[in-house]
Length: 190
Image (cartoon, rainbow, N blue to C red; front, side, top):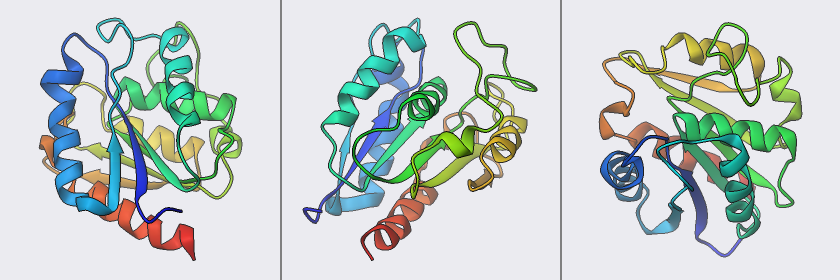
């Protein structure tokens, strides 16, 4: 590791999500992490109409440029597509952590899937050794907090963080996420 841990942040979907919504999440994360982490924030293709077919290749392309022990994080549908991409084909590099933020669960009990459904053994398909964190605001009206419980069942090794008073954008405060990333960095290099 070069001393600067990389964090790849995948935006959520919707018109303007990259520049008008999720940029505030990335700003919070950068502020909380400081200079020890490099936060990458690529624009996903056709953000107003997110699809696995378009976003998964873009995510794979971004992950190919990461060093070992990077963190990958995804907000909302970006997190859902990220986790499915990782389960379908793990990256060549070792990951320190996978972080889902307000990610809807697509599959039994969650949202219906048109392109895919997350498998019930999702946790077994994820890259070995990577910590998994699921952050969900308890006031989320977009992806109900129950979705965090569905992820907990599908990924038994996940650490679920239920955040009282937080909405789908987690009130633009990723201080708890930064803390989890910093703790994970220490574990991944020891």
